Length: 361
Image 1: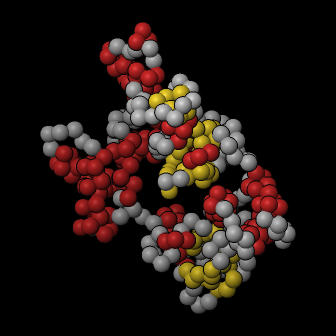
Image 2: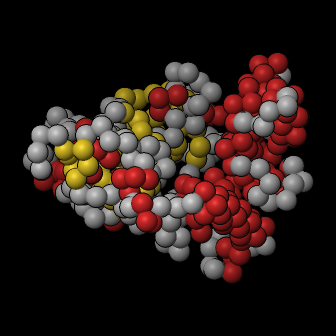
Image 3: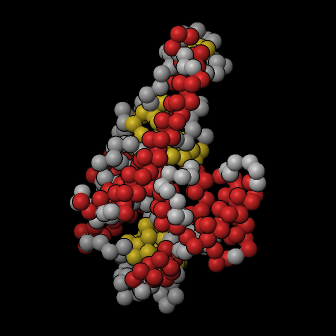
């Protein structure tokens, strides 16, 4: 390979996008696994939803595009158009390309319809799962679960709140509605239609309509998890009678700017005062104060609780070392997972060995 060419993998690694199918090419624990990029939090790392389950933050240098039909060497600066990927004899006609797009759209609509059927008719129960969410996290689905979750949510909105046939609207146009209470969905789409005027409706139109509604009517905002739990169970999100010192609870502080960096993390209750829970977040090395409505109590067995106590102590111990970014990202994933997998526990053991830390199990 001369100085004017680079491998297709090197070129591709500079052009990753959310939604790309990738394979982990070089990683001490994940090499050979495939998944879908769901976020690009930094220029050099991506969040990958692995087909085998779980989401991992992985350096882009460790990834390559999966199932791509590129030649081994491509001149630098060459755009990846049809001339690079196929010979003139194999090139699609316009009619064939249109047919491909139509078939893809048709299959996407079918997927959404089938997901809604599984949900509304209790298909997950027939498969032995307590909820649709449990089914979606299982190994029965071998494709990117994040995409399926989005399609399911879009189908629910169409069927339950808009009275539209499932598959009527693109998922990206329905996504901004998630910020609103369901009773405001129809009005938001109507206002988005007015913004669009004679041109086709876009996601930006819906987002603009939603933003305007949230600005003018604070009651239009989606109910918080606190409201949902109170409505369904008629009890506070986390009663003092439920929670004990050394319990693990989840921070739900997305409405509080000071707590937003901790939203979604679990922590260990150190003290319960008259107005606050004092929660230790081991990954941050901090004890924070949360009100009753800013934490979520998670019912779990004593065995699971003791496991999280141990993991919290082990994470705190590891933070004494100068961790590499990828190792810190793995610990961050654990701090957001109440029920840790065997693979995650092995990660802890490997890191403790690599950094010369003794386990505090």
